[in-house]
Each structure stands twice: as structure tokens, then as C-alpha cells.
Length: 332
Ligand SMILES: C[S@@+](CC[C@H](N)C(=O)[O-])C[C@H]1O[C@@H](n2cnc3c(N)ncnc32)[C@H](O)[C@@H]1O
Image 1 (cartoon, rainbow, N blue to C red):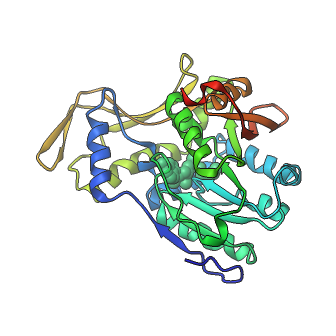
Image 2: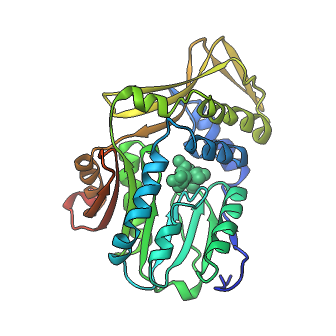
């Protein structure tokens, strides 16, 4: 494994969960009450393309706000980072947001982690063409599970900065978010920093529209999950009698996204039969929103402390730069 500075080829290491692990995650999720599948299952090749289309919808302002912030603040952010550091992006998606940062940084290297292998290969190839002199590598893996980074030797002593944009931390429930932040603290090393994009609570109608756009792209994104289960896991199901819903739940400060069965039905997975009652929900994804003070409290419980924050003019979206703290609760 040798990410070459001048090659246009973007190397990808595939550590995607094995089919048996994917089946197990699905069966476990369908046996929960309410039924709930891990959000990463939304991202097969088609799901990733649909997510990119969601980012273009007028209601989904998050991506535009974060891209604008990264564009205008890249220099300020880069000044806070050491020369020669390795940017480790969690859930890189189309890997566009990191580009201005890489331009502004001094001698960076870049590692992209994502569950969606083909999309990551394509995104990484485009990014490598745009930044031919920056060493890059991709890893297809599930970052919600403990992860070892198979780093090239030349990268092992580099200072690291984690990059976690898209408010994707909001897909974790709060305890799992703390757990994830603790794990990446250990993964990145004690001198590491973390740049993380966090969407904030605001008018519920705006949030609900962002996750259930008029053009129906968010609904298509959720329904693609059912097609993926049919195709990849040979689950016998009918995707049609499900309706997509996205609701703001103020008691949890989250948008809850679900596919709701319009009529009773049964899915067949091998020898198992999974019944759905009429009106029963399959939770596909949560998106927790955090005011800056609440996010910093959560991060402190994982041993991170805020060092800088950048936000848009309306203070709807924040980029937090975190360093390692000594919070006594971090090992609780
Ligand atoms: C909400 S999208 C954000 C994409 C991009 N970072 C952005 O900000 O526009 C989440 C991304 O994380 C990836 N992802 C979601 N869950 C993941 C997991 N558990 N492990 C690895 N990648 C994951 C998805 O494939 C997708 O590209």
C-alpha cells in the first residue's frame, strides 16, 4: 500500500462488513421495538447518489451552509492545524467539502472513510485529480464499529485531524455519539484535533421540510433501503405499501425518519418471517440537532473540548474545532 503523491489513482482498501454481518445487523434491527435499521444501510451506490441529490434540494440548506463556511474559513481553520498533518474524514460521501481545506493546509495527506465503496472510489478519484500532489487513501468501512486504520508507514507518525462534516454525528443516539467520539479520540491519538459540522435546532417546519423535500428525493432515498434489502439480502418484501415520514420530536431534539407500513404485511428472510402491522414504523435514520452549548457538553463527555467555532450569519450551523480535554467523565 503506497499512496503516491503524483499518481492520479485513488487507492481504496475495502473493509466493508461481510454479508453475514450485514444480515445480522438487519435481523437484529427488525427484532427491535420499534423496528430500526442502522443508518449506514441507506448508503449503497444508489443511496449515495440520492443523498447527493438531497444536498441539491432547496429545503436542505445544511450542505450549502457548511460548504460556504468551509470556503470562507478554510484559511483560519488551516492556521489552527499543524504542518504535514493527516486529515481523516469520517463518512466522506462525495468528498467535496474537504477540498478548500486541503488547498489551505500545509503539506496535508488525506484519508477518506466511507461505507459506500463505489461512491468513495469515484469521489476519491475526482478529489485526487483536483489535488494531484496530496497523498490520499480511501477505506471502505463502518465507522460505527471499532476500527483499526491500516495506515501506510509514512503516515503513522503524522499528527492527525479528524474531519466529520454533514452533521452526521446526529445519526447516532446521544450515548452512541459519546461512544463514537471517545473511540475516534483514541483512534486519532492524543494530540489530534477534530473538525466537526453540527446542525442546530430551529423552526420545526424548516427541519421537517429539509428531511422531506417537495421533490420526493428524501422519500426515494429511504425507499431505496427496501430495494437494497430485496437485492442484497434476498429479503422477500414489497416496497410499495410504505410511506416515508420525517417528524421533529422536540423531546429528543431530533428528526425521526421512518417508513410506515400502510397495510399489514410480512417480510421473509430465509426461514424467518417478520410481521408489520398497519401503521407500524421502520425507523431508517435519526438526525439529532445540537445547540453549540449542548454539543460541547456532549463532546466533553468524550474527552474533547471546544477550541474554536465558526457559524453562518443566522447561527444555524456550526463548525467546531475540538482538542483533547481532561474531562473526568470521559471514561465513565
Ligand atoms: C449524511 S452523508 C454526509 C456525506 C458528506 N460527508 C457530507 O457532509 O455531505 C453520510 C456519509 O457517511 C457515510 N456513512 C454513513 N454511516 C456510515 C458508517 N457507519 N460508516 C462509514 N460511513 C458511513 C455515508 O455513506 C455517507 O457518505
